[in-house]
Amino acid sequence: MPIEPATRVIGAAFTSGCVTVHGFRRHPDAVTLVLALVAYALATTVASLLAARFSWAAAPDPGGGWIFVPLSGAEPPPAP
Image (tube, rainbow, N blue to C red; front, side):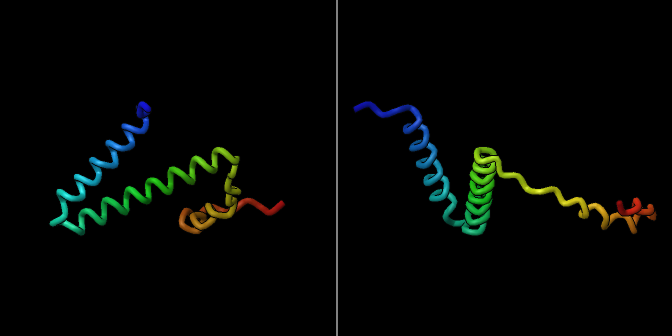
């Protein structure tokens, strides 16, 4: 049974990641930081793909920008 190319790529990426972690075993803080960043990027990517797939969208916050009005000295528009 032949191995699919995608399976080979995934296996090679996993193996190279293991070799890299093993090579930097004397620097656990750096390995921890990199693995945390990779986990964060993976979670963000999966969440973004799920949001796009299921058309999830966050409601815009119209009041969020009003925090800057006192800093600029501008008057807010009258309420409708």
